[in-house]
Length: 283
Image (cartoon, rainbow, N blue to C red; front, side):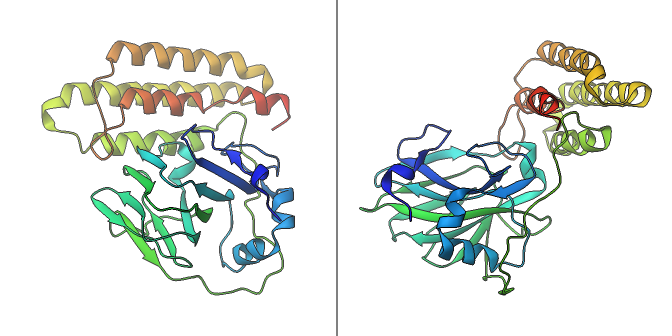
């Protein structure tokens, strides 16, 4: 049973936006986008909600109940963390009204109670609750690709499996990324740069060169010395070099699809190549 005091303010800081974590990294109360995923104590106490999650024939990542108070909103934004490169978020409205409006790109929809929705969160999206009651969604993340025909996709409830256990993401996130993981993370930026106006060809080429140089430096460290605690200074130096070179390129260039600054996205993904906290925990 959930009480009003159990709801946790969302890390975004948006007014009226709170959540109950059901499955998280290591099952603790956190906002980390890492794996493995385990149940929280909330999931054990919310049997009907857990049963609904288990009814999907999908491997579950992070899941939570998300509440948006009357008169509040989540401003339009795009989700660019590399976590989303392989995952989509499924929304199931549990408590809502026809005065809750969800937008993605140029579309706006009202999600009905009990329906199942997903959308391309790389594109700008947001929600506003113009109703008189809380809006509560059950949301969960699952690995998927190539499912979008447009900005928003409406889907049917997946077939029930009858399972009594969660199918959860079990792979451990790496403390230091291998080049095989770093390349697809930065390839997203390379792909986006291909859609930018030809008038910015020189600037685009400079960023492509920087991305290629960083991947080559990373690969050389891995090839020569591997990836463990003793190599941390080498990888930290590579990150520092990439940041300095990015500063020299400036911050004017933006991606075409969501207008995110290339500099911001590049630095974020370079930074995520190494996680000292996980190293100290033996991750």
